[in-house]
Structures are given as C-alpha cells and as structure tokens.
Length: 287
Ligand SMILES: [Zn+2]
Image 1 (cartoon, rainbow, N blue to C red):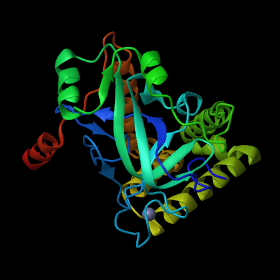
Image 2 (cartoon, rainbow, N blue to C red):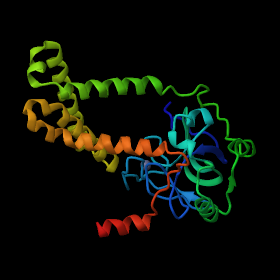
Image 3 (spheres, helix red, strand yellow):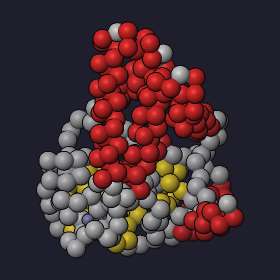
Image 4 (cartoon, rainbow, N blue to C red):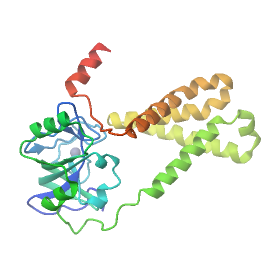
C-alpha cells in the first residue's frame, strides 16, 4: 500500500486534513499546482502534482495515477509538511476516493474549515473568509479539529512517517557532492577513492538528468532535471580549472535564492502570501 493509494475505502464522505498556499485575492491553492480550490464542491481533473495534464482517460482518481485531491488522514501524517504551520484546512472528500497509509485522493472535495496562522494579515484573513463563505474560519487550530475531526480509516498508519533518515541521507549526499565539486582536479585524480566517488556521482547524475528529460511528463520533472543538471555542472567544474566557476554559478544562484527564502520565513510576523494569478500573468507579460 502506498501513502495515498492502495485501497478504495468507503462510500460517503471522508474527512481529511491538508494545507494550501494563500494568494492575495484570498484563494486557496495547492502547494504544487496553481489550480485554486473554490467554495463548495471542487472536482479534480487528471493533473497530477508533477504538472502533467490530460493524460487520463480514466476515472479520477486512479490507483495507477497521481491525480485527485489529496488530503492527509491525520495530524501525525501531515506533521512533516512545513506549510501546515501556516495554513490548515479540513476538507470533505467524496465520489471516487482511494486511500493509503497517509491519507486519501479524491474526485470531489470541499473546504469545511480553515485555520490560518495568527501572523496572517487581517485583510488576507477577511479575503479568505469572503472566498469561502461556506467554510468556517478558525483562530484556534485545536478547536477546529475537535469540531471537524478527520475520518479514521483502518488503512492509516498509526505512527508518524519517518522523514528524518531520508533528510539526513539527502543532506549528507548533497554535502558530499558539493565537496567533490570544489576539489581541484589534481586532488580528485590523485586519490582512487575520490576519483571513483566522483565518477559514480557524475554517471548517476547524468543518467538521472537523461532519464528525467526522456520521461518528462510536466513541469515538475523538467524542474527536477534542471536542478540535477545544475548539480552535474557543479560536479564537473573542477575539470575546467578557474573558468569552472562559471559552471558553478547556476547552482550557487539557486542556493542563494533558497537560503534567502528560508531566512525571510524566519522574520517575526512572517506569513507567506502568493501573488494572485492575474497579477502573475501581467508581470510575465511586462517582463
Ligand atoms: Zn490521472
């Protein structure tokens, strides 16, 4: 059984928990798609989180696809999602529903209740309330969950998913990769161990980039390919001597932007608000 599929649970409504981005107009949007949710009934299309569109000639959600509206089954499953600290929503799911160990994917969904972090500006809070008149807005997250308890399905895992080992492994791998890309070529070639590690890393990254480009089904895959291509450029930079810094520039820029975004989120009173879609399009035209 997977996190969000494996069994087709029940008929009737399943209540789950999820998070959203909030845009300037008060709309709630998923973290990985710009398709806003609206008040009342929402119906999912086959447009999985990777950005793929229109693949499906199947009912939504399909156990073999990633489509459908996602909802965590319980707080412990949602706890690993950083954005849950800003926005939490209780949603009812119905129609076609598939469930897994962490939550459900559904054909139809409705926002029943919304909790926003106290840092949310008052104007944004009232716009959200105006967009979702049939949902109740809570200032107290616990109260929301008492009044709108998520459904307890047998397939949900009782313990919280363990993100830590994967995160530590990822951090160690990324640090090793950055380190290899900073060593002079003579040092790399001078040590059989370092040279083997470099060759394995370069071959793995090249294979991953090619695989992602060949099987790219949407913006998510292309973005991942771009990031890995940046890492590959960083890795091969030592072979080019001082001009190799040009190859390190894309990843350096990405790291600076990511670090800036993280530092910004530590500001007291911070609450992330997205530009509204129309404004984004307008900026795109002007740029
Ligand atoms: Zn699908």
